[in-house]
Amino acid sequence: MFSDEARLKLLMEALNIYSPTGGEHELAEFLSELLIMNGFEARIDDVGNVIAIRGSGEPVLWLHAHMDTVPGFIEVRREGGKIIGRGASDDKGPLMAMTIAFMESKLSRGTLVLAAVVHEEGDSLGTRHLITGNHVPRPSGIIVGEPTGVDRVVTKYRGGTKIEVNVKTRGGHASNPDLDSNSILIAMNVYRDLWNALGAGTSYENFLVTPTMINCGEAENMIPSNCRLILDIRIPPGRSCRDVENAVNEVLSRYGGSVSINVRWCTEPVEVPVNNASARAVSRAIIKVLGRGPVLARKWGTSDMNDLVVLTRNMVAYGPGDGTFSHSLEEYILIDDYLRAIEVYKHAVSEFMSIYR
Image (cartoon, rainbow, N blue to C red; front, side, top):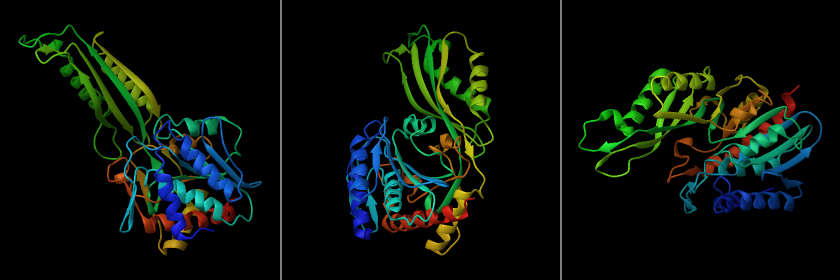
């Protein structure tokens, strides 16, 4: 249906629409108009997701990707074999590849759903609306469009949470050797205590505790009386949000009323069988398109796959793009990978409809 140049033009148009979390409406309009202009039914639901549906009956396969990006527009440009821009890999490359595959796929049986969701980089509002609502057919399988690499399939994501540590002390004059009143030092002690309570480390199987923001003190010559520290915690498969809660309670018991710790939200890790129907469909498609077997990979972050597992364990994450450059000022996607991923998605649709029973 689309030439390669048309496919690239659609990606660059999507990249030129700035869509940080909460600002996805213009991109949603672009996608819904594209689908409608090409003869497909599409709508924008109550929270801003774009939903398009083809076919009817079982099985039901979801092509799921997100429209939002982290903040910070990057000039969209084509350099050699790359397209550069905010969201090129996370997640507009996979999103546009899925959208084109949705329109071009041959559907011999079953139902194909395209779900382009909002707020994945935030609170996963879009995906949670799909989970709790009844306006989209329940999936038999899901392919989650994420930058895994064009020859990689992912069946495992770590979980995560954000923790806010607040320390309040009496403070004092900086010349006073009263280290117990220094809110910065106390906040850093809380960080170290949480690291140790969780047995944190730098391997995939460990919790990871990363300080990401700190705001402390009132003046250069005062012992700081207040400090706010944000910690990003990643949870390995096999562990849970309850482990984080237990560690927080253990650490809090060591401090008086000067320290409060707020767990803002928590996403459980996810691990699905490597031989589930969706993973097998994508793996077969990779072999057909690339001429080689897929690489089984795991992700260090989280995605909507962590939430979608309540709907089905027939699920896999796959998409073009190098996740190493996601959220960076150098975010890009290889043109060849983007074009090949479209073909992989198309073959994966056919394979899933064939093998699912």
